[in-house]
Amino acid sequence: MEQKKGIWSSSLYNPIINKKFQISLNEGNTPLERLKFLEIESGVEYVYAKREDKNPTGSAKDRMIAYYFSLLKSRGIREIVIPSSGNTAISSIYYSKLADIKVHLFIPSNLDKNKNERLHEAIKKNPNVEVIQSIKPLSSAIQFSIKNNIEILRGSNSKYSEQGYKSLGEELYQINANAIFIPVSSGTTLSGLALKNKSQIHAVQTSKINTISRDFDNDFKYEEESLAKAIVARVTQRKKNVDKIIEKTRGWGWCIENKEIKQYHNILESKGINTSFEGALSVAGFFKALEKGYSFKKVILLFTGK
Image 1 (cartoon, rainbow, N blue to C red):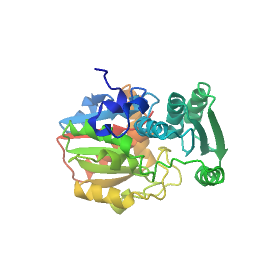
Image 2: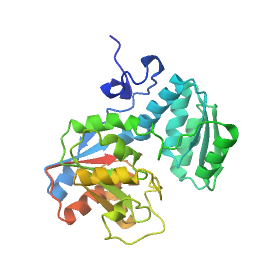
Image 3: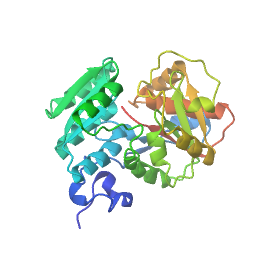
């Protein structure tokens, strides 16, 4: 019997999409690393990092994109519009090549230097991608989609975008942690992985973007810029559902300032852990929760991207 690859090894996806349309780069089943240095510092018995930054293109977005492009392939769709601040764009370049689907990518004009380099490196391997830089990539993508009658993927509100993260939820469920700390932008990853999980769900956002977390945490100073640039959603249509998940699991929301993000990013780097500022954001949220009186035996910190 042929072994299923990537997210398709999860029973959650079958028979939703016929296996002949399922594409994969072996995403998912990412490493779970025990961070003993954080256990010592925090006094918590078990602290794990779920290394979603170890996915094939470097972020948790691979799960969503693997599902979505498989779905497009099954529907005979050959062209798609995607607005993205970086990780979704990079992931879609690789998976669209696998699915043989043309992508019109709308990205910010001021895209982070590291992501810009990774994106253009990926494009070299897939000429079937058009990249359009825009000051307002979302509105530009919507206009292009309407004008050309091409479907658009907006991860923040697509009914399909949560599906890929169900596999992450299934992997986390096996660990039976007290709490999961998640860097949150639109809340799509959070709402997708919440399936079955009884762990407390903690949404961690920045001092700049805190659409969800500010309803729980007001102990922070607003900043006009943030190191965690993947946290971008000033408005999210998933807010009501995300709030419900947090409250149901007795979790919380945390707003983190740049100095704390930088502090924990430096600590991670000193231990040889190369991850994004968003990964450090989840660590900072964990320590803020401890400072505010939460206690845990076992926690998971989600490192969502490089």
